[in-house]
Length: 311
Ligand SMILES: Cc1cc2nc3c(=O)[nH]c(=O)nc-3n(C[C@H](O)[C@H](O)[C@H](O)COP(=O)(O)O)c2cc1C
Image (cartoon, rainbow, N blue to C red):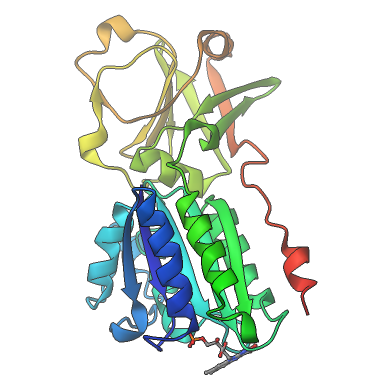
């Protein structure tokens, strides 16, 4: 898989850099492609909160700086690794600027996994950084936790630490279907589930859940208005299979019937309902309201307590 490591330490030969190098070595030995960005040697400004990305230009940041190198790599990444020295109980400021600029594209596209590497002077100082990781990356972006690795004081650059990081990198495997999130569709007493695929539209929808949409049965689908989100036109397909769920161009639709006549339509399929689930949708009244959510629990909770216990 493609792994992007954001190294937030300004010291090229420092403790964080040593952790990054070991993790990278392990991951590359397992055949993964790793790109490391030393963000302290790049020019990345903080987010302006101008909302240009969410109002004027779809998901594109108005600021043109070295994020232009990071965005394309993140677009192709399966895994994101945040690496940082602990500064005042948090991530370094330079890394925080990069994180805040993720706001524009929103991610994930194919991003599925994450890990956190932290170096500090003292033990038990990780709460701030781990909170950001847990809530913004595992929770908000729905990434799977591949571990938090910490080193304090003398542990930094120790052979045991570096070997542990090498082994963790080497143990990484490609994202598999077990981690695919499931979309829950509820209409009154009916509840059906469908696995979301890896399209940009599916990932974007995931990040906007929960949502409530309403629509009328046209005979082949329930077509519901939904505020425009991000999707890749190239990922659209010609025609649908009964049970496909599509999201694009300001619509959420459950395409429950009519696959034989659908070849003339271009649709952005994000999920598919099996026959039994699709039959339940077909039996709904003509006017229906759908509550869309993500199946819980999707993200494995990291054992934060064990890290705090190190103080
Ligand atoms: C501005 C600054 C703030 C720091 N804040 C903390 C802190 O809150 N807790 C801590 O244990 N160490 C703190 N440190 C120490 C670093 O986290 C530690 O030396 C780390 O290993 C540096 O990693 P590096 O070699 O990659 O730069 C701080 C260092 C600096 C320069």
